[in-house]
Length: 262
Image: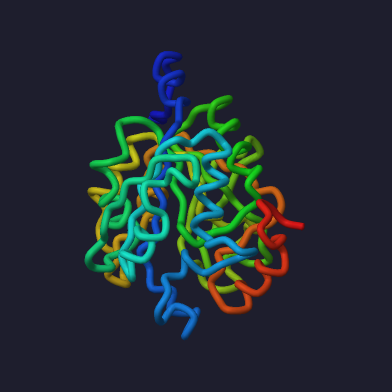
C-alpha cells in the first residue's frame, strides 16, 4: 500500500519550510593538502567559502534557520559562520564526534531542526542560488515525503543512481552502482526537501557493507515502502567540489564576490 501524504491539512502543514540541515562533518580526503588545515566547506570560491555560498542561497530562498553538522575541524566552521546573522539567518550547530556516515550525521541535527519539513543538503555542494527557490517552490506546489534534486551525468557510478517514471516520481535509488551498470543518467545531487518521517528512517538504518550509516539507503527504503518520493532536475551549475580540479572549475565559474555563475 502506498502511504504518501494525502490529507490537505497535512499537505499544507508540510509545505511550510523554514529550516535547513547542512552536513559539513567530512574530511574531504580527495582534496589532499587543501583540507589538511581547512575543512572543505570553508574553501573559497569567488571570494566566499563554499558553505557561505550555500547558506546565502538558502536565505535568499526564504530559509530563516539552519542547523550545520560539523565534525572535522568543526570549530573553524563555527567560528567563521557564527550565529548566521551576517548571512541573513539563524545558525545552530551539532557536532558529529566520530565519522559514522551521513545518516548518523543527520541525526545529530534532530534536536535542533524542529518538527516540520526541512531542506537537507551537503556542505560542499555548489549549485546556482536560484535553484533553492525552485526546489522550495516545487515542494510547496506538490508536497511529498521527499523531494530529491537530481543532476544529469554520463554515469552515476560515483554517486547514487536515481530512477524516475514519467511523472518524476522516484521508483528506485541505488547508492554507488557498479560503473557502467546504470540505465539512468540521473544522479542524486545532494539537495532535498524532506518530510519529518525521514528522521525515523535514519534512526532505524542498518550499517552498509562499508560499516557506515548512509542516508541514501534510508531514502531507498522510503521508496520501497511506497512513500511519495519525487525528483527535480537541477538547473545550471552543479558540483560536489570533490577534488582540486572541481574546486578550480567552480572558481572559474563563479564570479569573484558574486552570487552565481558568470
